[in-house]
Length: 261
Image 1 (cartoon, rainbow, N blue to C red):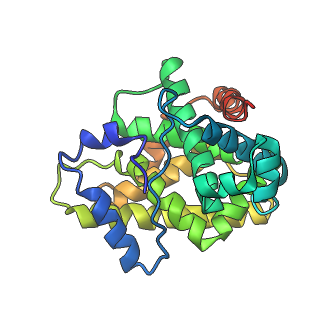
Image 2: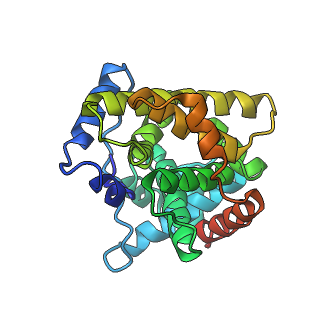
Image 3: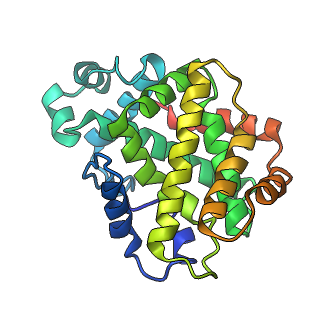
């Protein structure tokens, strides 16, 4: 689906790249509706200027009024291009939503590195990145609306799980006897469960603790895929989270960058 932003982390764990194909097989086995999507080349040197305008316009509109209320016509008007051009570059509107979340992940990773907050340990890298990412997607009412819409859609949720697999898989110690399929199945189970919990809490107006939820998710993945004990791992990770106030400030910076017109 996407040449994942976190491929560099995964290469430290898997020498082969066969896990992309494997992840698709596992998702299919779970009877999820998989969308064939290759992502978007966001290199400034090679990118089509129209695609840049379309994507930025879509990001702002989705943030301001939600995904479901963002039409191709509105995107075209804001980007000052034709509707047919928008649909030619992005035949599925879901692709733009996936790009929005992936842009958040990329900007989050870059900011953590820039601020010297990127740990050397891959488990902590995943933990801190997930903590910042979760803080962003629940940051305000606008982001919570987009997040609820995404998690409530089976099609979009499948796309997001596929996109985020490598971020989560990086935290698993492959020194044991686990097969690749066991590792990926564990990651999918943990991610699906936590995203269902996040949707429930948002719908019920429960205050979401991004740090606690990220520790839960990483601990769940590692407990399902390795021999670590969930409670012990969770408590350990809780003690290694980034300062919540610092994370909130970085979340605001990331959103500002992603939404620059």
